[in-house]
Image 1 (cartoon, rainbow, N blue to C red):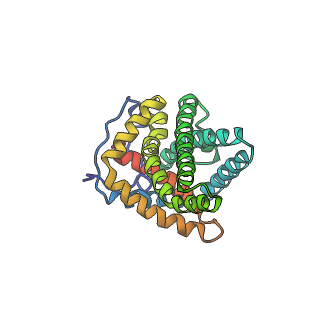
Image 2: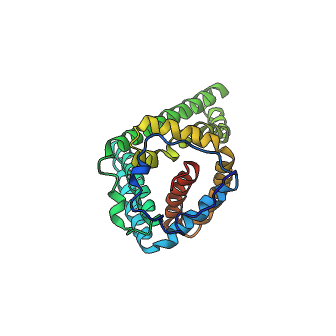
Image 3: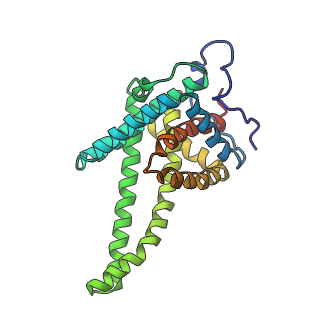
Length: 259
């Protein structure tokens, strides 16, 4: 059970100056927290948003536009968008840290990841992209095999393909879960602990596994929030994305017991 329900976005930083050195002390140890912390992370993510709503909305608009435009470019655009997304998330982790300390927060944090930690962040994005593509190709292959085994007739194959889609979606979620576990904490670990991409993914995976109950609660609540955010012409995502970034940072501080 968590021994600390502090909200980093509601409390002032401790006296004694910058704590950057303590955040770069090497590979951190994770701890187990209670399942209810999944809700607490979302609450703290909301607090991160209300601490600077105008800045967050502007950052989110720029982030979404850049990712969407890049995805319009065949093949290369998808690769660039994925790498850009991971690097910018790394920068926004620094922005969340600034908010938690009462320091200035703004659009500059969106590209703060393009600094000394850009190479491991790009590597992190590359590993995530490769894993996602491998899972996508596997699901596509399974769908083709399912349709082929159903019969030679075109209609029979199409019916089998449609019937197999829900099952393949479940398989895709199960396969993507470990990937998401490996990248959830990784941007913060790369930014604040000078870790390589692979080391950060390893630490993130086992920290997530250790806190599976909290992540189950978080995921169930997040599914509901995504549906609500999508109803008003997707406008709710202007709030939900900042809340997500804030929740990522809050979970990192909680699980790794950071000041």
